[in-house]
Image: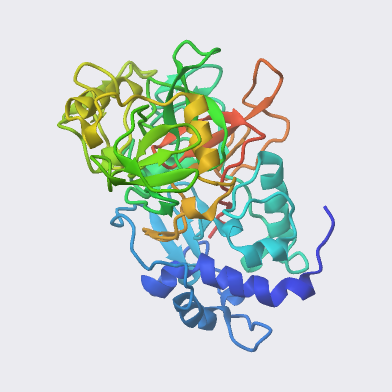
Length: 461
């Protein structure tokens, strides 16, 4: 890879890194550990910056000035075995013996992207798999080869082809829920101590046009997957692409649609609000498709229409069944919960929500048209969260890239470029991924665009 001019970009890049990777330190203010972890290096954290200040000196005033940082804490910190190192810049994961970058989406910062000079990264930090490898290379070659924060052995988190832990399924490789043998799966299930299928950002909210709470996680559609008997087509507003997901274990979002008019809509074209009638204030109308949608794009999170109780998923590889709420706290649900006789959509229609009893799951064509008419772009930063999650900052409720490692290795092992989880029928290579919106580990086309978080093996004491 072509070496960048590190001298040219050093001030902006260090400022950006100090802003984003240590925002936790600026608000949670973890004390310097009395017994330093293997991740504590010290020298790079206090080394002078070009302006004469130190990295630690720059944290609080600069982070406090970030207008896009909400300062709103995320879920309660229930982490296990995660220890702040270097004033919160790095997180030591004693469960896996690795050192995580505390910023879960460093590539989401435009100044850092400019410093790294890696093409093909979206404004929200997402990128395809090949670009993710180049991004890690750039982090390691930064500052004349010293690397970001003085480390030049950053890597993608790794995943074994066959996970000996309690993954929920196995089909030419292990995938599903409860996978804790991988770097990201262990972080979700053990380190962050999140219970599946909970999101790492259950209260994610935004405003996109006249909609609110449009989620970066996947949405169910009414289309069945052509190549997967147990699959359903899903859609991502984060990437604008569709895929096939198993209905057995996946908790995903629901955005219903109706072909009925729900009152008088505002003037204009595209997606406009209803200004009178039963849809006023709670529904929008797309003038291009003549379809109506709820204003709340994550309505099940606040309106369950009487659906309550738990459901079982499985069986797992070990024969066990997993129990979870019918509708999770973040509004996600199994496909089977949507349209059953007592399901969410059935009850929504019984309530004649916004004056309609003909709400249904959208087809892929319908939800894709909504994406277009909302003027959502790939990598739209309105679908990016900037809250705290325990010791991490900027951890996204979406998909992250992982790489396959040698089966005899562990989380400290490097990616093995000669290994691929599987190849699709059309010959496209699939790479491992992990969804922090519900804890599902799977594989995806390497051309999709996901987030990247990194770690390096903890040095021996």
